[in-house]
Image (cartoon, rainbow, N blue to C red; front, side, top):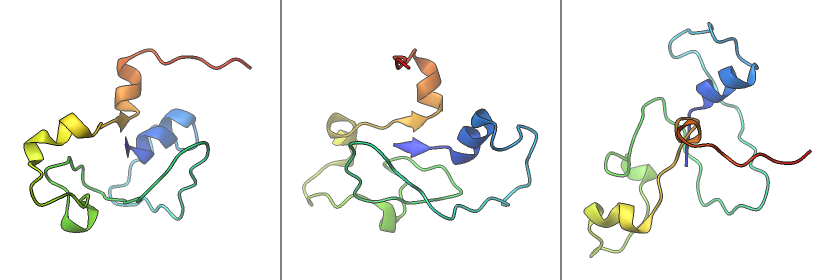
Length: 93
């Protein structure tokens, strides 16, 4: 999962939509809740995909694994962009 933290903060109202100072954001912590298993959290000011990951962010895959088969084994979800592409189920409450 790829989170655009600045966009999420702007959408939530915690960060003004007009606030924009290049390279001025700092993330001090990330809290994940719910039923999830997280193996690693990485931050970057550049957008990457499974091919352009820096070495320290890459998954440890077997030597015989072909990178062009990556989408067959893993999902790539960018939020909130992919969240806006389809209607998500609403919770009761």
